[in-house]
Length: 280
Ligand SMILES: [Zn+2]
Figure 1 (cartoon, rainbow, N blue to C red):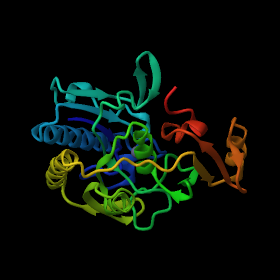
Figure 2: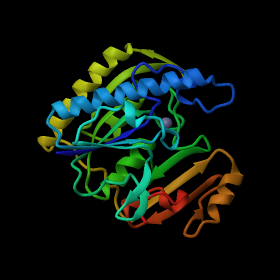
Figure 3: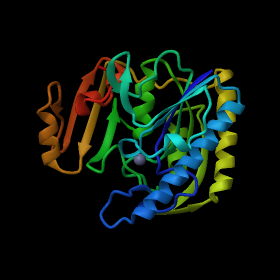
């Protein structure tokens, strides 16, 4: 069994404030950002150990938060079965692409550390890709980053098996991906603050859910997310000038004051039409 674990940071164990996750924002203290990254590193090591204990033969671990660069190679659990990617854009077969290594040899996708989509009530740091997007829709259905990433993985029929995050992120995952196993490690108090299990208990819960997800994959209990093709993908922006800019890209059409859309033939092109990120 081969897994691809794509890590974000908003949803990790014991991380409760905006400043810990969005450490690049003005006024954020460097030591608080460092604490956030330490929580991520501890979570990654714990979940990787759980996957190996569950009998996973090969594991690709990718750091995607703020473009990556949060995990430290010298701090990670070392095992010949595990490959760490410090960024989510990298090389495969000499070509630059998103999530290198995610292909038809992978049996399951895991999305730990994730957050709910833009606009979700009662969620911690809800957003979709950037704060400039107010909504992202595939064939008319609103999805967040989990939906975007699961759709990309759907190109190779790779199912989403596990999500870790706050209660809102886990609810979103269960609604959109029947069969997905979720680890809800916290709940929002406000969009910028949450509370929940202490980091150690949250890691234990997540480890248990990783093992459960591996079992479910073995039993064929997770389905790939493959919206009907050709698919219509639309993005609504917070401001009209961002929509103006996006509408100038080839193949992108205006679908409203603040909305653009494109019609796509492949699941792996889910964000490429707008951001250039995907497969070459
Ligand atoms: Zn993030």
